[in-house]
Image (cartoon, rainbow, N blue to C red; front, side):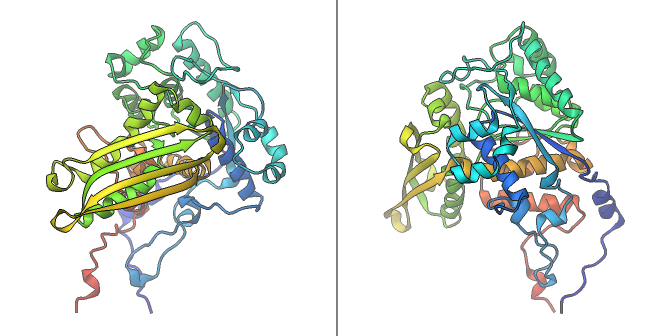
Length: 451
């Protein structure tokens, strides 16, 4: 028979009670309503109507252990913390192509026709707004339904006007970027302060991309912003400053879906067993719009930088030179139209063990890009809304506890990002325990073996 958990201190109970309840409608705003967005939205509707289960979603399917293992307290996460109900989600967004979401989902060819037909009236009821788009930043796409304005400030304020209109129909809002990968940008003076950034909007500074304009508009409206692509967006001092000023949470970038997800599983295993890695070659073939965009070298570099940082941060070669100092890491992405959204990620890993003897591991992951991304997007929407309602989190700016979802997690200045999937998972769940006034789980376990 388990021992009842001890009563929590009053301060812990007060922290949990301070979280605002998830009442009313949660508005979800998505720049880029293509394969990932339509798969997410159609999936949410299918789940709401009882046609499918939310497979892959931590917020919907995972449990969380509370207290000791012997306490037998492991509720579903969605029953432990005050998350928005899926029935309360309302969707809108922007896209550079015409048509409603049923048309967009047919074009994406992720979901089968019979499944789409079940949700057809719902998907047809959502038509994206004209988008802010500049082909300089995404060379392989041509905008067909785009906003025009006298400068970037005007365009960003048009986004704010769209947000203001959506606010009249919903009670809270979250924005999540599901648009294409923009060209590689490095930080310049315009990114260093909010004042410089806002002047840069007026001056049409080339360092300000469309994704930054969406992020600025959201944060100015006090709305959390998450980034599903590897673009330089909120990971600049100017927008981090705005995030804190407006109590509007931000997080990392680039959904950790396929190949990089596997890397953040395997690399920690090699590291904890002190096995060396001489080389890690990764290649991908995919034929969706993402693959077409990444066929441009400038957009590919943005993705490459995001994917390359994972192993360096996990292996820490400066601390383990005998094992990882000479690691050769290569990443390739190849556009191959016949595959569509069904991506193949192939890895060749050259490792070495006792006395330096070489070994190899081959991984061939035949995955579905948007099927893996959609539940991550759902979790981020719900968790970012939670963060905005939680006094302990909303003023932090960067939500490092959501690193679990990103290839390129963000972290405080001077703090290296955590890429190990399992450490990220512990960080996420401990944050949930913390805001709800529960004890953190250390996995020490010695108290089970005392007198």
